[in-house]
Image (cartoon, rainbow, N blue to C red; front, side, top):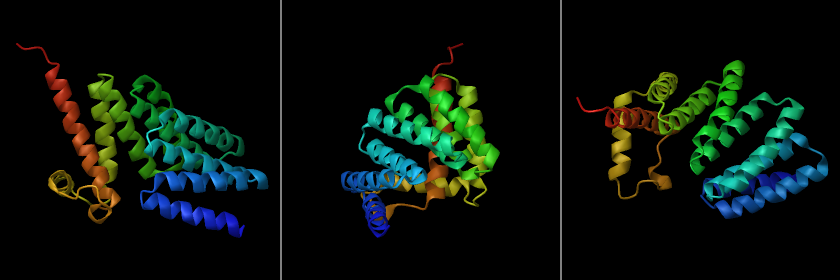
Length: 212
């Protein structure tokens, strides 16, 4: 157990520092330990973490394989929260690959599960992801519906749209944008991404409107 906890802590720290390859190796060590111990929940968690690291490394096909393994175990043990997480991230990986039609079913199922268990942050995340998929499929009205519902949930954190836009503009202009010292709290980043998504969909929709 001490070895498992050590690798887990190391992996979490490495991931937080952006050391993705090192974190991947730590999570792979943890996966072997969890499998040997017959710990299905731990096995699913490590498979999911491996998927996250593979996604961040740009290896989306392998990330999908790892997420899929985690999903199968989570369905087997009845972990609804975990199933929602795995489905959501499967949809994200499809979005990153540009496979927007394939992203819709896992995101739809993830959204249904997250609504059922009352995971409001998860609902907002999945709605944001669905908005992206729908926008690239040309379904602008549906994309806006998803983004607006997402934004309503994220605004419940008390952060205004104007403050989120100001944050996003500052990160675009900052010479150290993206550095760990300059990263905002998640609510700022989340609302900023959603408001940007709404603006982008409106631009996409207007650009396809025939001239009169």
